[in-house]
Structures are given as C-alpha cells and as structure tokens.
Length: 64
Image (tube, rainbow, N blue to C red; front, side, top):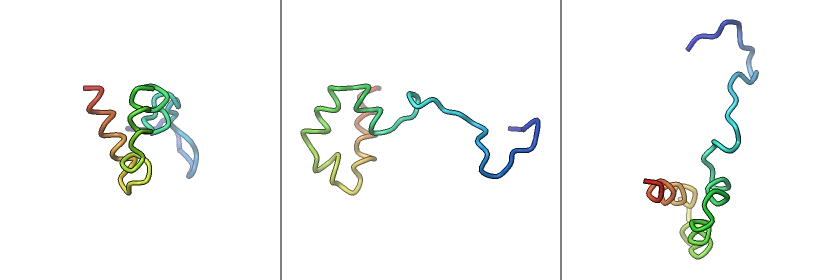
C-alpha cells in the first residue's frame, strides 16, 4: 500500500461503512433467528468470558 501524500498521526485514511463491520450488534440486527438463539443462551453468548468469540463462531458456521 502506498499513499500519495503524507498521513498525519491519528488522521483517518480508511473508511469502513458501519453495515460492513462484523460486530455482535450487527449480527443480531442482520439475523433475528440467530439473535433468538443468542438470547436463549446468555451463559454462552453474554456472560461467558468468550461470549463475543462464541457469537462470531456461530455466525460464521451459520453463513457457510
């Protein structure tokens, strides 16, 4: 990657639209049926120390 001009520290140079960001919030919004599963098992998807990871794994498995 190369820049045509200097990029100052803390200057934004890349924009990712919010709807393309893979986040727990977006996953729940995109797929209500998965959100129901996540809500039914809070011990795995909310309070578990790997809750965010578990959510992402289920999403990837579901989309394949």
